[in-house]
Length: 397
Image 1 (cartoon, rainbow, N blue to C red):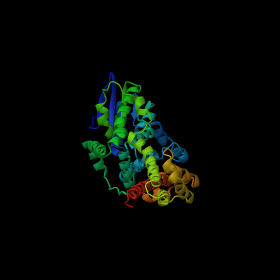
Image 2 (image 1 turned 90 degrees about the vertical axis):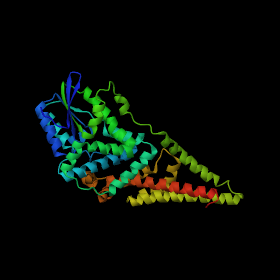
Image 3 (image 1 turned 60 degrees about the horizontal axis):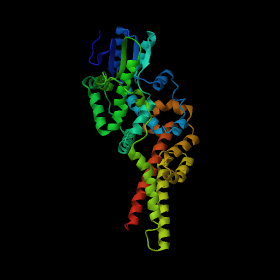
Image 4 (image 1 turned 45 degrees about the horizontal axis):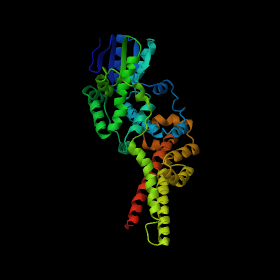
């Protein structure tokens, strides 16, 4: 029997489970998985994958088959963006170590196929996970995450040796890294890591066979061990789509009402009728100029199509007053229509997401940049307008 610090022998009643904690870009982890499965000949092999990620592995042209317009219409654009950034981070590390991302998962799949053993996909669907991350995070956590997204686009990754990566895994530094993430973005860690720990424990319980090998990332092992004996795990609750936090809902409807209040007050808070009318009209012009102008500027910085820039100019004020219609979705849809991504854009995605130039060059990622930057520009224009209008109403501008 192979013994290793990253191998845990567990019981599920009379059933035996060998839980392997791995690094997703490690030669050593892939070799450990191979040796364990070949030595133990399990009835079932469980892997930290979901159906959609499995399809990506099985179907090499999964990128080409993605419908970007459908993604935008279903309001999963930010989910796709985060997915790309996570893939880029893992790919950078894998390129440094000269190994395919998720090689240990590929090894487990290949051995299960070769031994004709059932393969259990125990991870929650990545789209559900990322939707819950975004939908259940508080407003300020979202702002922090957006800041991290932009920082990651321009951040230079320091080279890391495979020995350093293995040392991190063996000494628990991955767990420390997740704890640090939890302090900065507590909601992010909860929905991206902690919930999936519970989910994978539940799915291992459902897998067939008396002897199982489960291959998961090392960062999940402490949480899975902590919940291994939990009497019941509510899987349907972990798969539900979020309703959003209260702060976000208040801001979604409150900010347009505040804007209308400020604009309306401009018509009544001055003495003379002519002066009130003039100040009211000036307030409207100011708001429209800032909101439309900065939304258009963000779209221009993303190198959006002229039609997309025009959409930002015309659509930003209407999107502000109608909380369910965001300017980001309007501009992204127009950009995807005006410059429909070609097959070569999808084929180049694995490489283009690794560089800043690639994000602006590839039409798929450019749609995402239009989505983010037009929305940030429009929001910034609104907040600047709020400040100026407040100042004018109280005699400071």
